[in-house]
Length: 114
Image (cartoon, rainbow, N blue to C red; front, top):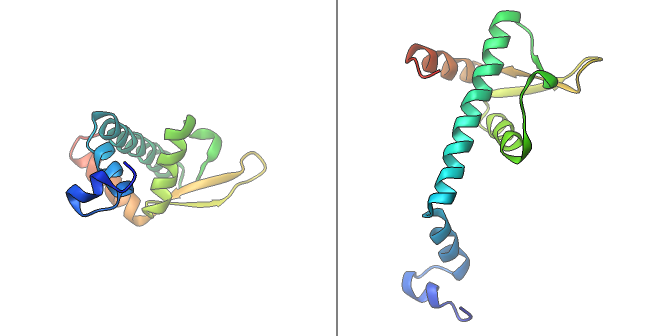
């Protein structure tokens, strides 16, 4: 592939060509679907607990497993659906849904998606 055999076909660089090939695989598409599902479950968990307690959710209440769980949490933060705040003596941090996050959660509940 030196010289960009794939790049000659599309006008993109070899790296972009490889990324496009990978993006089209069922494996990568499945990973994205899994990340979306995990993020949705996590948002629902945070919002439901917040609505019942009116307090940020301690980190140890969340079911964050492995890379996918950690990435789902970072995606929620990046999308500004939740905020991270300092924890207390029992937790490192707490997560509180933003208005945008609560709005998404309530829309999912209204549509019976959760």
